[in-house]
Length: 430
Length: 206
Image (tube, rainbow over all chains, first blue to last red; front, top):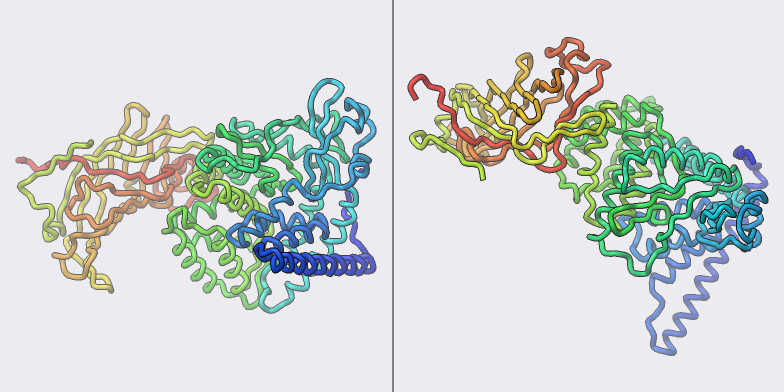
């Protein structure tokens, strides 16, 4: 199957909007009824009244009902306990790898016949392992004796993503016309993100990227990426070596125990960003496993992007200049890579404000450095002064935001800047 | 623990002795300072020892905030490690300056306690190649109470990239990289710096 992204017609989009409205209405009704029942129950029995967890759970269910595009966004937001309340992040956490699975028979129909024939017990030998926003994973044993993980697309994911990404891109283009949002390439960024999310449907491409990531990260012995069984993989199924021990326990290990694994994960991320150029943008807890003993496992290269060499180099250069408190050079880099300059752009004002922003952050201790806040202020400066950022930089920033959010939940003391330094330096030298 | 030898006959806490002075001192690199290579190799620099010399201007200026400030010129930096085969010296084509600024307002008498900062352009000789930096290696110490600041760590908190001199248009005199890529980096993953360990008296009749 070759995946060419279809551009849905207006009627299809309008129908989808109606469906979304109905899903939201149903969720609100369900929430109201659930809240009323719990509230009445609380009045009668004296138990605690329904709290915010009820709303967070309803939100997660709504996101599941809306489909893969919304699950993807929620997965990213769910890593950011600094932006969303803790109970919301906890509720969204189930979307990493425990999305409501599709009916087994429907999901198994997506497994190619040749693969079914090669598995002991056929479809009966495939046990559901995980369900994500776009794909489901089964465990099985090949007739050759190897235990494997088989990843197939969720039924209906292609159509749902086509419609919802088109809707989100239209909304972003409309939002980009608002006076307050001028200068932000919302349309271009959303289109790039949409393409990247849509490409997750292409399992042949993911097989190539996963093999490339495994090869790139082979220099880091503490980082494990499962091997692709190319002979069994194709556009409709991805067959990987099965890595045991990734089941989540209700009580995660202590942060101190996970620290070496978190360091390994950071090194993997920085190696991808500053040296290899192929970046896994989706290192949320469903794809990144920190294991006791100092190692980590990275799964699912569906949302991986290859940075253009100039973007990789400029990204490293920006970090280097920032570490030196050199706001002037940071401004040179941002201005030199701007993809659009408005007629009333204020270059001097941008240079002045970015220099101040960099100076404000350069003296901070690592633990006090707020990546989200810094990025938001940088984007705001670009918007206010009339410069559109290169969308190429969206992916490395997204990768960092997701990883930072994930690791700070598991291991709050991780030191990003310290671990990044050797990779930034090597990125500048190669 | 590093032993520090100071000539007790001179009151190095007297700020009035700073303008127009010239000092030679022994120093050692401390902390996690390393040289980074493009292939991921690193070379530790901790413990590398050598000499340095600093000249202070005769005139003391006053900043807008009223704090006294004197300009410094680094005359000499010479660090060598037999173990690692690395020789670090000053780039004579660049201005290796710095400032000592009193922490409070006043005249020359307020130079101490003071904040000292140096911009250094170096030449690193390693494995038969010469490397130099185009962005200064900035080293600083705050609230020092004697001059030279014996025993006080002078810290560097930023990484500095080095270029192969042969790649640079203008060689050691270059101020811009052109198309050259850096080949070496001097950096620390944590605090690092140098410490002045011993006063060297080079007067004819010590």
